Image (tube, rainbow, N blue to C red):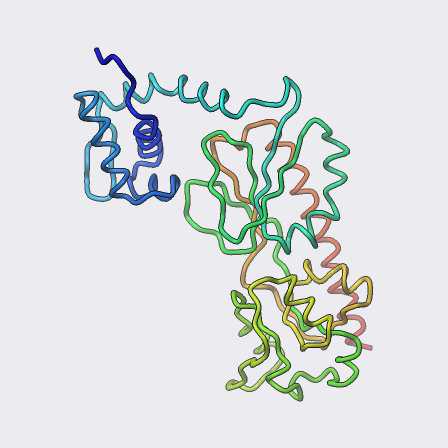
Length: 308
C-alpha cells in the first residue's frame, strides 16, 4: 500500500474523463490540453498499477478497475469540494450567475430585486465575462448568454428570442430620416458578433450594401455610441429597452426582425437539482415569459403605428 496519496490533479483529470467519456472534453472543462489529461491519467495508472481506461480513438471508457476507483472516489471528492467551498452557514447559499455585462446591466439587474426579496438566503455573485465560465462539479452556477445552442454536457434552454432593430438618437434620426435606403453606409454602426444580413434583407437594402460605421464588441457600448449621435446601431430590443423608454434612443425605421441567436440559460446537469439553482431557474423562466409578453405587445404597437 502506498504511504501517500496521488496528486489531486490526477484525480480531477480521472473524474472528468470518466464523467465525460473523452480526454478532449475533460481537457476543455479543466482548461488543459488533451495531452496533459492523458499524462495525468497515465500518472494515476502508474501510481495505482491499474489500467483505468479502455482507449478507443477519441472516446474512452472505464475498465472494471476504473469503475471501482470512481465509485470509491465519489464521496471523498464531494467532501473535499464541500470543505473548500463551504456555505456561509447552514441556511445561506451562494449562486454564481455568469453572463455578459450588457445582459446584466440592461436586462437582469432591473429585475433582480424581486428574486433577492423572495430568496434572501441566496447570495448572488454576478460574473460578467465574454468567455463562458465552466463551473466545477456541483457548483451552483447559472449562465445567461446570447448565442446558439450547442451540443455539450450542459443543459441549454432558450429563454426568449430577441428582436433586432435600427436605433439612434432623436437628434440624428431627425437629420437622417426614417428611410434606411438613404442612410450613408458610414452611419451604420456594427456589432462584431452580430450578422446584419436578415435585417438588411427585411429593410430592402441593396445586395451590395455593407455597413461601414464604427464597430464594437459590446452591445451596451454600441447603443451608447448611437445615443451619442455617432451613428445608427442595429441593436437588440432587450438591451435597448430602458433607453427607448427614457427617450434617449428612438427606433430609426419600422423594420425589425428576430435575432439569429437566442437568449439562453445554461447550467450543469450535476448542479441543476440544487435548491438555489432550481429557485433561480424557476424565477428566470418566469421573467423571460413576462418579457416575451412585453415584446409581443411592443410588436403589436409598432405594427399598429405602421398601418396608421
